[in-house]
Length: 306
Image 1 (cartoon, rainbow, N blue to C red):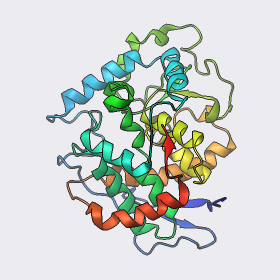
Image 2 (image 1 turned 120 degrees about the horizontal axis):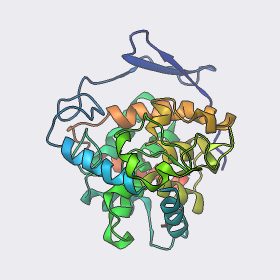
Image 3 (image 1 turned 90 degrees about the horizontal axis):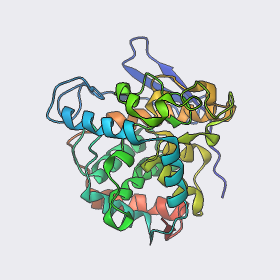
Image 4 (image 1 turned 90 degrees about the vertical axis):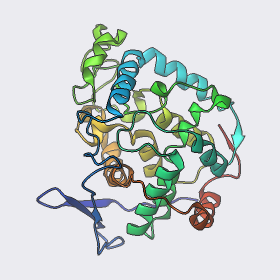
């Protein structure tokens, strides 16, 4: 089954407070735009890494360890190891239930189990994009790679599962959060890996770029390795939703090709829901589960290799 995804058009208000999306052909025409909340679940600005809070010290320590250890060689080894998809076989919903045991240590905005964030994002998109069921499902499954934290998957440490992602094999852009800790990364002073292009060519395409290892890359590999029928935009969103240096700061565009630029439009739409839907308001799982099970059955096989 091939799913054709129309190209989105973003209209940003002059004060930057809201973004309204619609389609040129009128397929998506929202009467209400997504309202960005003033603060996160802790009463602070979203992604505010400077604000003193009970989570700030832990988040900064997370990124210190992450930035020291995420090297080009490390990410390639992990991709080779987990790309074999030999860890387990289970359904999408079984994986969702496994994530109930974990809280993302890199997230300054929320300290709830992962299933809460998945359903909050999916339901927010479902409200504004009722006809784009592939996008609802993408929101539901985008963080399932965090199953790497589970003991049955090796119990990987959080620093190589969650957090912002970034290219490896070229220079670390200064827009990456806690950039100062890259100075202790072996790649930082490498004569090739520390240059603007590193091992890549201009506009080579992000499909050729090694990204720091984590849940995004793992779930992307799971989707590629199974008979997943979601459109290309869904694969792009899953792989790059934590790549904030690109979709928030505009860094690394010199590595993108034309297809990446088209897919980026959908990622920017998705990111707003991924980031700003986080709250302490719980979604009734049993109430919405039948709808999401119907989408899982439509786009995924009953069991997936992980």
